[in-house]
Image (cartoon, rainbow over all chains, first blue to last red; front, side, top):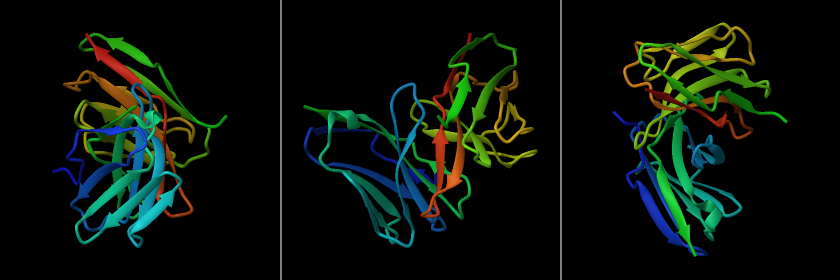
Length: 111
Length: 115
């Protein structure tokens, strides 16, 4: 049973517009959520995180929103750039335990 | 330069052979992890270790073994018992960020192909 789900396998966005990547989870005990970015044949790199006591965290062009009642979080990238084209993974953990990853969403930013 | 080094980057193995993937970190992180990535399945946890000489099974540990004799090293052995070993293997180590989140730092990965 998948506890962290990314239902959109791919997303295509024009350069300069907003990219919105979504993630749903089932375990209400998760208290930290993280987003990672991955290029082909490389390891994922950490982007941004949010604690369950917050509903928003912002870092430059990246903002993560958390809706605990809906068990949903989203990553907003504004403005999107061609270098943002990658696979994005959502991950969650309970009590700083091991991270559970979603299946990823491939973002393509076109000119 | 601090980081995680995985070797080899590419590895070919015949069926029935064991193979060991190396993972070394110089970040002074206590916890280390092995994940496997398959197309459409995201990252799945194989084994993790939170301290030297101790490790726990993840979600898909069958057919794999690990050791943690040194803080810096966490090698993964893919045994002949692993039914579908062809995959991209990722090693990671972690620290607790100021926000409290357990942030993983990943290596560049090792791609294993069984012929």
